[in-house]
Image 1 (cartoon, one colour):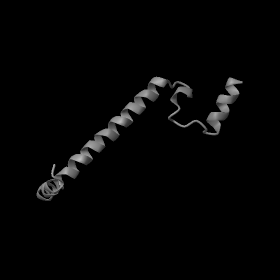
Image 2: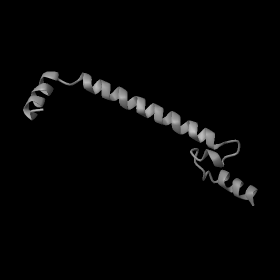
Image 3: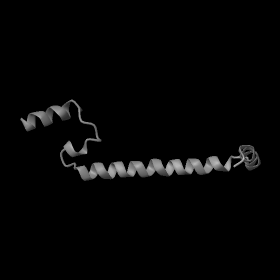
Image 4: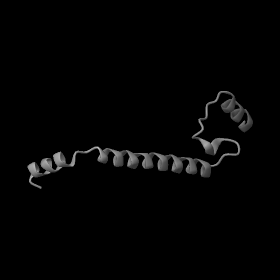
Length: 71
C-alpha cells in the first residue's frame, strides 16, 4: 500500500517541495532549514528596504510634522 501510494503521489506530482518530510531521502530537518533560510532572506530584505526608505525622508518636513503634534 505504501509503495502504491508513494508512486501515485510522485507520478501525479501531488506533494510540493515544502513537504520535505514525506519525500524519499528528505526529512523535517531539511524543511526546517528551508524555512529558516527563507525567513532570514525576507527579514534581511525588509530591513534593507526600511534603511533605504529612511534615506529618502526630508528631515526638515518630518521635524515640522513632529512640532505640529506637540510631542
